[in-house]
Length: 484
Image (cartoon, rainbow, N blue to C red; front, top):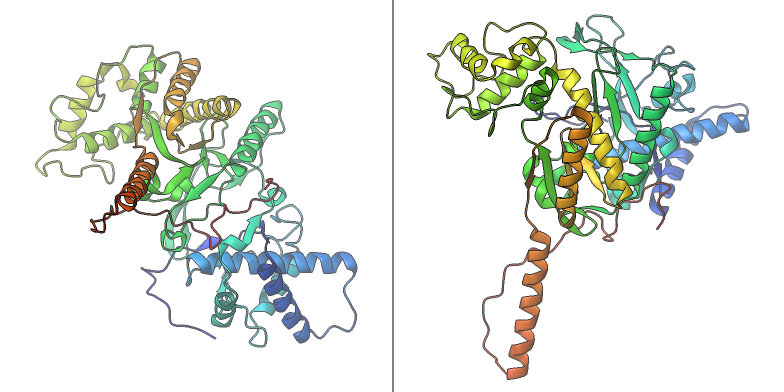
């Protein structure tokens, strides 16, 4: 059955099939058993599968169903890209033990009208104009999901199937993908070295700490498209070098809209504080040339007053570019007057930041990201040793409100240890969680006083926003391996 979809411009972006999802509730197990029974009834097998093959078949089916439910819970019309070719499902490339060549057979079986679990769009392997195969939940599948009340609450992720927390990518090259040109990087094998082993153990420890943390999202997780169970971080290096990039990606808090992040995330029953390094790229540039940076705001450049946002984008583009731009880098002009030529802006930046001009157009950005990620790793480890949960966002961390001062100190110390210069950390946020409690207590106390005095007059009640937890029974998302 095919449904009417939104226009492509409004459709959610395809997401890669995630094989690590598994069921954690009776309802989820029941649904998987139903689908398995329905599929078995359509199979014309003359003999049973071998036990090992049956186990692989059931694991693959379970993972597909779990991720289809997850996808349609957050994006009802969203598609998942899946590997169906023999090359992609070969022993050295498969992302899970059950993603054998039979995985492709299973996907196609689930798309049969008699089974009606998913819709399948078979891809085109053409090297230039090819498109990937995609799947999404059928209408019948979604109807049964709704009837059982299934959503992301009913699933967790198997830590053993999350993959390597380190990834090395090649230099990006321009390619034609899905009929459009895009700059794509390939995944490269990681060196077999003590350095890689050490970094992998660092990330494994950080992920285990965050997986067991008490994290909440207030509000409608479906409308906000948030999965609090999405906590596993991957450290990604670029340009084929472990000295380029290295930022951490993958946590749900990184993909949350900034406007919602500060008012919706709760860590250990506290509102969050956001701590980030002020003008970190420029401070790293000055550290590299051994010169003290100017005091104050490094983006407040003479002659460019009133255009701080644009100036920041241009300066960071200059540090990231591998050649000196001759015109405004894409998306940087902003509100600057159309009469201004790029040369005027560039000269102003050169005058103000003369000591680091040699770094403009030298592709320093990825090197600075490497230093930045080292600082963040050190910060996360130190905070973990203090029992403090911190959620990283590149050059920023989120911590519970009461931990903001110690986190600020740790970040500044880590910056100095890695770069040898002083880092400036800015703190944002407010303790709205405590404010809410105080209002609730005041309202309760006021009601009690009126009852004692026999006051029958009503007064306007305070408008208190009660926490609406994303899960129907008001508990944290289950994480595999985490204790209750």
